[in-house]
Amino acid sequence: MLQQTIAEMVDSPQQQVFGEDKFKQLPAQCRSCNVLKACWGGCPKHRFMLDASGKPGLNYLCAGYQRYFRHLPPYLKAMADLLAHGRPASDIMQAHLMVVNK
Image 1: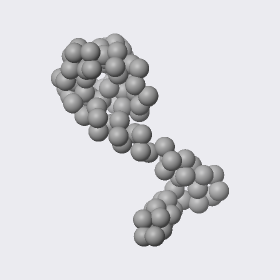
Image 2: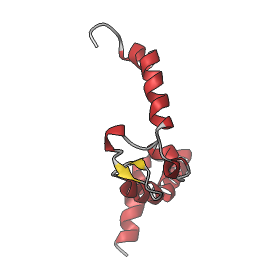
Image 3: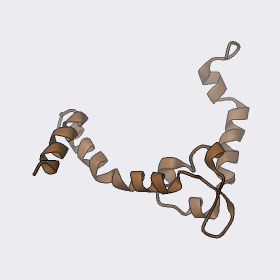
């Protein structure tokens, strides 16, 4: 860190290899998951579970990631709509509270 900038480290060949290896080591269950583009398999240090076919490499937090990332889309869309209409995305909290308090 004292010899390179963050940008240089991110663009380094070592970082590129790390990113490629991180993806290559994902089990088939992850590669076919519909939330892969949100979690990307998570941190490799958490990949110690067996997948549905009994192969190692599934992230310990997989079920939580799936639940979280499947819950988000309607809220993300609503925030995008708010931004498109010149309103702050934080207005989603007002709308959410109105629904919860009904």
